[in-house]
Length: 355
View 1 (cartoon, rainbow, N blue to C red):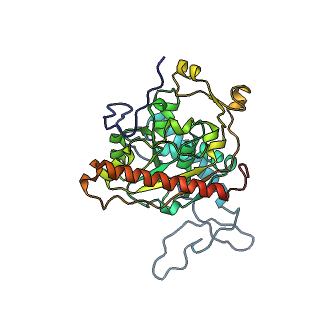
View 2: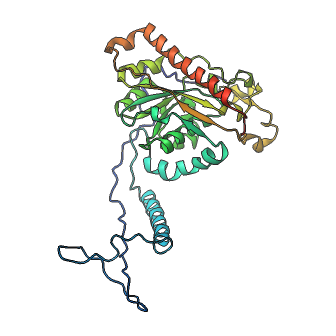
View 3: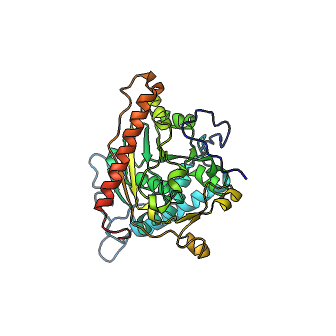
């Protein structure tokens, strides 16, 4: 059987109608009810007073200018608000009263559910340390280029959480993924909801034009499925398609280096025949998988560091620069060298793989 089909990022062909969905407009949002403030009553008597608007010549409004002590009112109200918010979320899901964009991205589901699922893995299991998040622009389009590793693409998901939870503007990262992601059941739908889209120039240019943060890992399967002996050695970055897209959009390129993902599934072998039968680009053999069955699929709890480097501007280049192969080669090499240098620097600083 043929190997898995991978659409290269620098392919300028149209993605066609794959995954396109019309945005549904959100209806009315559930309103929040404010509880009435209570004023102090005479000793031995508790009296509820209605909240009134202060006017000229009036005394202080009941409860105004006074912080509620812990446990007096905020705790119960906070729990009630969370329950009400959860019920409202379920109602919108059941009635279809929510919206997605043309790529299938569901911002509400991502914020309230998917990020909440990924966050414990990010904070407690991999204990990700983030550096240089201030290098990501506060607004407007930008292309984040990162190394790719780990046998399974958990590094992309952790990078999404890192940007969302650490950036002052709480920005969302839209990842470009290989077509294999969008043919797998369940994974396809979840990837769309998280904002992932096909790794083609058309989709990348459209997202950058809308002012989105776009993430790409140019190594692709070559980096993801490389042997453990080649860890932290960057593979080929393709023909520079991501540079061409950034030049056309005039958006900065932000290099990103990820340390820790290489060791979660140490790939000591590749069952190529089985991979061809299953239609996968590789079938990993690790010290635990497939020998321990499902238990072997649990990643090792390595300590991660994600560092975003200084952005490389592209808006000063002329419009025809995107057609200059020498310029694209030089910029691609500059991005690759900056990521590789940062990887070596982080590895020297690392004291332990797990601590």
